[in-house]
Amino acid sequence: MESAATLLAEVEDGIVHACRIAQRERSEVTLIAVSKTRPPEDIEPLIAAGCRVFGENRVQEAQAKWPELRERFPGVQLHLVGQLQSNKAEDAVALFDAIHSLDRSSLAQSIAQAMQKLGKAVPCFVQVNVGDEDQKGGCAIAELPTLLAEARALEIPLAGLMCVPPFGIEPTPFFAFLDRLARDNGLVGRSMGMSGDFETAITLGATHVRVGTALFGERD
Ligand SMILES: *Cc1c(COP(=O)(O)O)cnc(C)c1O
Image: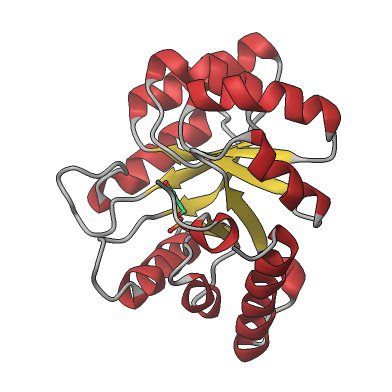
């Protein structure tokens, strides 16, 4: 098993290379180290190697792991990249620095309520179900304009759009599509690209790449 520093350097090389190809600045892309299922012992070496933004997909798991880590490493940011239930919205707003899975009107209302109650504004990405998959989170493409209008009316700070393309098929058209949707809707952020395709995503406009396996090794 390679060290955290080596794995981070390899991913970083990939990001720099993709930025060069796309004639983009490295500073336009945020690397989110997705640490779901990883214990703090696996996370700390990555922080030591210089990683500053982490992602979790479950609120409860993050609540168990991160308060102590954040106390010890105050410069670290935490993003929620997984689906969010409305009844966990307040916990999510309290713990996370960004939410990537806003995908329905009821959740927008719960998030807005929580932000008001806690006096904390958390930037949100609206997740789009770009592959029109039954089982997947994300709002339907046709419903995006309505959801964005609702979120804006609720004064939720909109960071951009997020997608998880269908598994096992070429993701390029979906990345290009999300990029166009973001542009058409006047949004800067594009949260797209994982371990297998983050370089491609960057060449197509990703501003946030969510990388787990390439930084931590295979999950059990
Ligand atoms: C797990 C996960 C990732 C990271 O996936 P890897 O293939 O391990 O890089 C990215 N985004 C979301 C939403 C995830 O749940």
